[in-house]
Image (tube, rainbow, N blue to C red):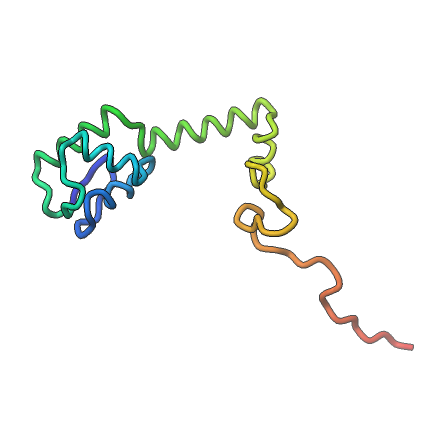
Length: 128
């Protein structure tokens, strides 16, 4: 199992897929990294040589912001939006969609589980 940027890459995956387990590296960046490092994309992670692993580490460290550093940058950007009072910051504070999506329906990922309001329970029989 290779360890790159503090993440253990699954040994059975192809390198181009395994690199996407690192926060901040998607499929496109993974292919760019492999080209720059001179590693065959379809190689399994367990079959990488030590020199290939080292070249991958060096390429990622030199050219990409990943994992903790990237998460810190993103968190600081959101915090700045909140402090400034920008509309996007207010949406982050309220836990609502930030990029203009509708909220009348859907948006459950941001808003959480739906809570029914009134009219759903049967009325209790009243004494007359």
